Length: 476
Image 1 (spheres, rainbow, N blue to C red):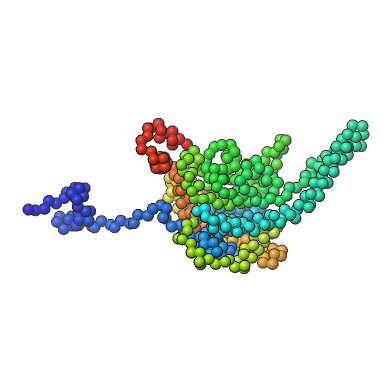
Image 2: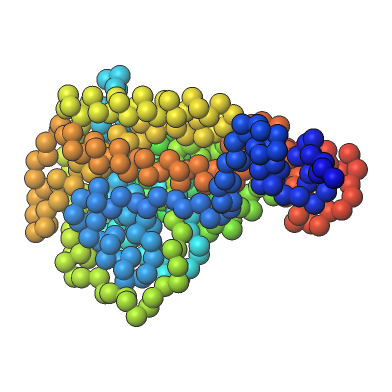
């Protein structure tokens, strides 16, 4: 009896056959030229996607030796030390270095860096070691200025006592009244300067405004997960909207007015904040469960790094970082901070041509992502961020190992430097995409709501729900 030839793949599978057998029958019994099914690619879970490693060879020697040395000592990915040290060195260059863009304007070199970590003790040690030099410089500056500030405060108190005495005498004496007026003007025009403060942490917007006025627009913000709601989300509270606007202006190096007590207004010119955030990955992923907290924030201003530990740490292979690496990194940070000269960098003709090719490459990549509004916005800023990185790499020419007066620096950025900056910028692209995907905040199509509801079903084990409950749960 002739075997019944299946008429469809579905029928054959229903009868217990396999897909490969059906294709074989189509080719032999029917005599059809039906190709074999293409092999399936292995399924790759999203959490298993390997992110590229930081191109540590693109860093200058002082930063490279430190990043490699501390990573081997703590058994952590080199990405964390490399990106953190790069951001901290950029903090020493704020208000001193600018680099020209393609349109003849210039941008500052302050970086916004976000390291998404696994929250281990070793990672905390790396961050602490990278920040320690800058923190010690701040403490040293405070101790230097403390006697002078105390002297000026004492003289000011004496002038105030004298002013009160002259004001009492001024009711009966024209001379005393004139002296009181002159002294009042002197006190108003010569306030006591505050102690130096280069670093801020989780402060309120008002306090941050105050620090910017006192420090003449130059600060380094070392934040943790407490700042996520202020900078990484689109919540519409007045305080957080003010915080986001402040950081955007300081990232661009703009000037703005600050309202002070008593109706006074202070102008902060060329305000620049360098932001270095360390956020555990579970805090990032938790944002997707709060729809009202998902949004743009200032995410498009940040460079993201979320390295993964390749495997278990081999504590037997730990190598203590060399003294030369520690000394070289420390001298570089000190050299950048002690430099008082201002530079306006520009690209050489070869570097300009290479940078324009990279701009075209980024634009093509951007146009292929029509549904990812936030990631497109991030890519739009990437060429400017690349120039900032190039300026930071170029500024290592200020390095002075003997901590003497900083040497003169060439203001033309070479082709080699822009090549290294492009290599580093390419590293950040997949990391930013992964970070934004973890927050589920860059999709603007209909599937975004479906993803959110699916997370709700899985996290709270929802089995049944009404249309009203789904609507209320997914409202922004």
